[in-house]
Image (cartoon, rainbow, N blue to C red; front, side, top):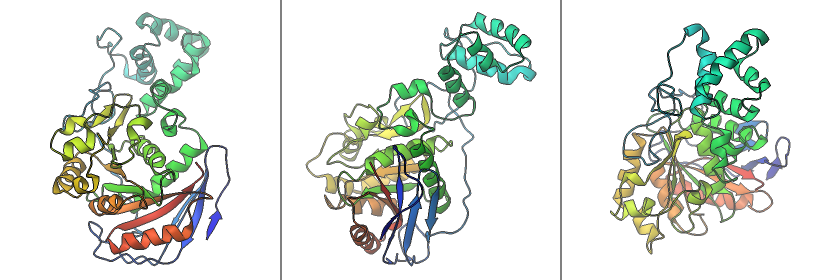
Length: 380
């Protein structure tokens, strides 16, 4: 049975789904969980509802405290990196002078605008002098003086609060990365609700950092949801990695506008290393490992021990790892990846994916010792 849950919008809509009970063996790999009597997942543009999940215990979110300066190398070389600005530099690379702590918030805004190339250093003093007259916030004053735009201030505020989303960075991303391009849309709001539930139900333990995102058939929207869910996790400070494990029809390099040279298939074949993990200076908590060239033996590559070793290595550097898989009807690669990850989320498309098909896929996953966290229907 598929029933609409919550309000619909032009951009997003998620729907509740219920299907027959599919028990999950208690020996499911990496998941010490109870047998699940069934699944019921629902989330809309404004609300999120998850019931009968494997673990009812509350989450213990671990927000990283170590930070790397913004603008780090776009290639990951094996070290841990996260968002944050250790110090603010002007466009010439010089460190901005220290200011009175009482004005730290105002001057941080000014420093960020200078670092972003929106203000000159000498204009900060002009804004500060005008601010004493208007008694408005620094950003509002700068806007009134027509020195910056609303979008410039919004971007600086996002950086101030460690929110890995900016209008400037979004312009360099394809429209499919909705969570970054339009972080205040109903769709992004719905994803934040889904993110919260996954944090409490799976990513609440250091030994559960990997999740496979799969679907019944191609075109159900799994890659789209995987990309945007990854951005959503990065926006709360979770070091997030998206792995394009769909070696048959890869799309994540297109979603993020990345080169796709060696990637995952290059690593699994021994021709490349962790430098293939691409980072985003403007989305500092997010990294993507593209699929690489299409191999003639994708399932054999994914079944090698090196893939499990790779996931274990990466899980030591990232809080959340989302693996985009091929559709279940297309190949059994999804089962191989799901077993490596230990858990999976099924993505379906409204008016296309049947509840019986999802129930059947859930049964196959259960027999493969894959913990199914739930299923979502979208209208994309």
